[in-house]
Length: 477
Image 1 (cartoon, one colour):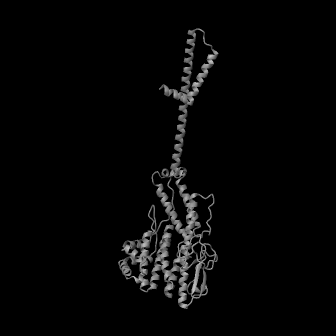
Image 2 (image 1 turned 30 degrees about the vertical axis):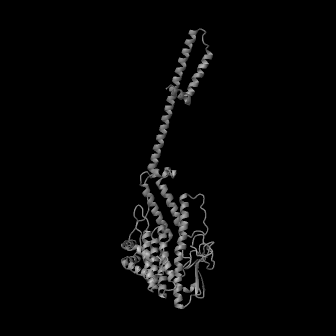
Image 3 (image 1 turned 60 degrees about the horizontal axis):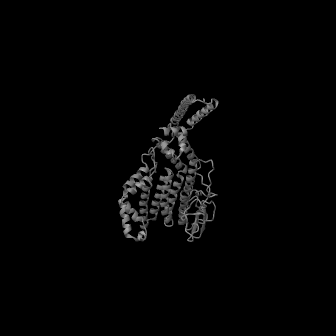
């Protein structure tokens, strides 16, 4: 105990200060009052000095203890007050925000439900994959085993094909399931239904029925269009992938179909283009999904403390503030959703927050894909079908694209990338070139977008940095 007390007295600053004061007081008294000469008086004086300095030290230690206790009490009151204030703040900050997500009115016959039933009736999925895969095998019409397998798969999925076409005649509305609703029609289901229809196209082509095969290809395009139109941007991506499968069928059959089939294709593509839902609707659907997800997280226990390590700002952020920032970022994207992004990527201003910066990057690409991989591709196919009908009826292609109006087209579709808003068109003998000026907005007279630094001169997919024109039937995505 003596060693512990010696360390405490020697190391603790307040106690050491009191000890130093006692020593100074003793030295002062020794100097002011010289010790008596005789031994008895000296002893009595030393005893009296020790008693006095010892009592002074005890008194000072008691005063110091009371001072420390008062400071601790004051500190405890401050901490309790701060805790009470923060608790009251959290009670106000965690009040349930109000959401304005519009209610849905689901049709009695919904294509979404019909196609889900069609997928549940789908049989021999592995056989579908085997039948449509080519690899090193001979062409479909020259492979009787593959064709026999195809007919067996189509016969076993007769009900599935009827349900798919029934859904094409019904309105499509994406049902929302609280608190979180995901993809409109699961992408895997949609791909499998599309592959089954592609298998039907292969059989129709092998049987010498190109007009029916084109109609089936247009069915695939319509399925992708409607499933992408009534969901979020993830549904748009899935829908565009499905549309691409149908367009590839149409491009392959372009020079084989009759004038009547080409005219029918024009009518269907014009209707799809006229009813195309703007991208702003998909972004608004993304906003509803994000708001629903945030509200789901808010209702979980300790949501604030679980995320504080990653974002300490959540300690002082309200639920309403979080939702307001989220909604504001989405509303900005909705306001510019139907505008093409600039040819060159622009840096965001320094005052842009992290949420808005992330959405700027995400939806800038989505706006480009909507135009380049969706609208432009469908409109180029539409005009190409009109040119096919003109060629069959007149024996040649028109000298000007405007010659298609009004007999084959009511009006020429607009090129989203074109400064003059018209597609480029040149004809040379029995061949023509129809093109969009592409992402660079420069009319290069029908020079296709090629892979950079590629000696094989292969066509390239269209992206935001592509240089050249989007050629109908060549630059397909």
